Structure formats: C-alpha cells, structure tokens
Image (cartoon, rainbow, N blue to C red; front, side, top):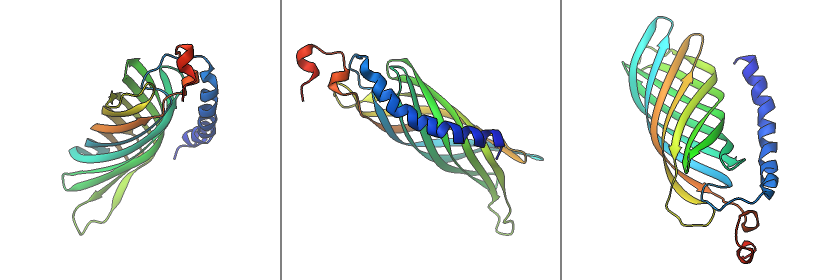
Length: 211
C-alpha cells in the first residue's frame, strides 16, 4: 500500500468520526423539513462490468455483481460525509476477479434527492485463472477511487427522514504496479434516513416541540 494513502486514512478516519457529532451540534440553524436529512444507512446490490490490465495482458470486459454498505451523515443541507464498504466479483476469458474495499466518501446534492458522490480509500482487486492447473493469483492492493450518482425515491412520507430506494451508477478505479482494474456498477440501494429532530426544523412554533 502506498504510504501517503495509509497516512491519509489514519488521519481522516478520526476526523470523520469527530465531524459527525459536530455536524449534529451545527444543526442549531433551523432547516426546512425534507426527507434527505440526518444520518443515513444504505445497502445496495448491483451488476458490475470489470475491465482489467496487467503488464503484458489487457483482458476483456467481464460481467459480475457487487454488494455494498454505506453509512454517513449530511453535514450541511447539501454536503455529506460517509464510509462505503463493498465486495464483488466477475469472470471472463477463463479468468475470475474478486474486488472489495473500504472507502471514505463525500456527496453533494445537486438538485432535490439527486446526489453526486465520490471518494478514496483502500481497495483490492484479485485475478486468478479458472484452469485447475494454474493456481496463481495476481492483482492490486492499495488506493482505490470511485465516483457515482444516485437518486433517492422516498416511499415513506415522514416530515424529515424516511426510507428510500436509490438507483445508482458508479465507476471505480484500482491502480497497481502489476495489475489495474476499472469497475462500472449499475445498481439499486435501499436507504434509511434518520431525519432531524423537530426542534431543529423550520416549523410553526406550535409544531416544533410536538412529540
């Protein structure tokens, strides 16, 4: 693993943990109620297309699947911070690939419920042959980068927060010295948003402190 990435992860992880409580305290400024507020937890599944390169080989595009878990919080009305854990695999050309990682990500809500997100973290991609006589495994371990877009469709009707289904499109790149990989994912996530307490919402006086 590259040393700068390790240092960044060690420094940013505690900062991220400290930023989440501070963000809740910063919510003293009243906000209009809307579903996409507070903490979020998401579980997603998607179809993946994986393209890999090695020193002397450029493989085709392999189909596969991926599962991911996301957790975080909206720090401001439009900007959020979080973590993503993902794992998946693909196969083709007599080869199989396995990939996964832990990444820190930020998101920005461009328009209502439509967000761009991306980040950096520790990623792994492993390549192996499907032939029984060839047991060698190759791949890359180190930095990973991702960029995606999602849209939250809320099927609950809470004043703030609720459950949503979020179609997503994401691209991930994992560079390495001996092998590199790019993964495109089209998927669907189910997400839960905690919302904000009523006394942090811009409500009529009689509504703000109702239980």
